[in-house]
Amino acid sequence: MSAEVDAAMQYVDAGPPYIGESHFRDKDSVKANGGRWNSGHKKWEARNLESLRALIKSNLWKPCGFSRKASYCMVEHINTVAPPPAATPMAAGKPLFHRRDLADAKFDPVKDQVLLPNGKMATYARHCDTCGVLVDSRLQFGLECECQPGCMWKSCHTCSLPLLVGEKCPAC
Image (cartoon, rainbow, N blue to C red; front, side, top):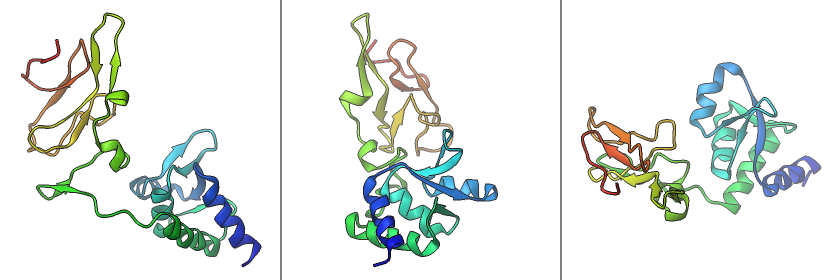
């Protein structure tokens, strides 16, 4: 095994973030493959093994300081450490999850609820009763689900619970 291949495997095992390089013209494709902008390094990064694998396989991004050959060795190493994920669960032919990964697509009372100083519980996420997508009032596009166009969500002003427009907050 060459020193570069050995360094590539150590790089994967060291954990994220994985900083890489790509052309500006490919920014949309890099984002679609899981890349996130790292403003400190002024480069795109992979924040987990799945996005690292997808970015390398896209041939639009490569880890800084490594050749294409070493990058492909990283993919082979990732496949032995973390096999490719199963297909994304679907609801009515559309992806069920809109958060970063499958573990984030489940309601978590520790993460998604906070006790407010007034004694009320702020709840930031809930599943859509119709399509099952987790709706999260903290995410930029979190107040969207897979229902037909016109399904509008808002956030309760008191407890932040995602609500369908016209729905009264059950918590307040």
